[in-house]
Image 1: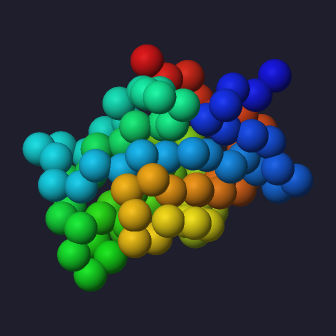
Image 2 (image 1 turned 135 degrees about the vertical axis):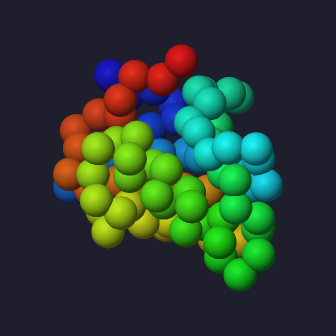
Length: 93
């Protein structure tokens, strides 16, 4: 059964994400307050943080970057992200 921070979709999964730009290093922190918490090193300027978020989530899920799409929240910290090609997210701390 899916947790509140992710749900299954026809071709993958949809994640509720909280991104924190400008961190020391990029990493998936874990689930906090019903969202997958991801720190990204890139600043929130000209889409750099979104690009880094896609890269980090693709590596975490084991898919290509082209399989990760920001569906909602492109200009916000709280985002909805779709990952194609996986049935469930990898384990998180």
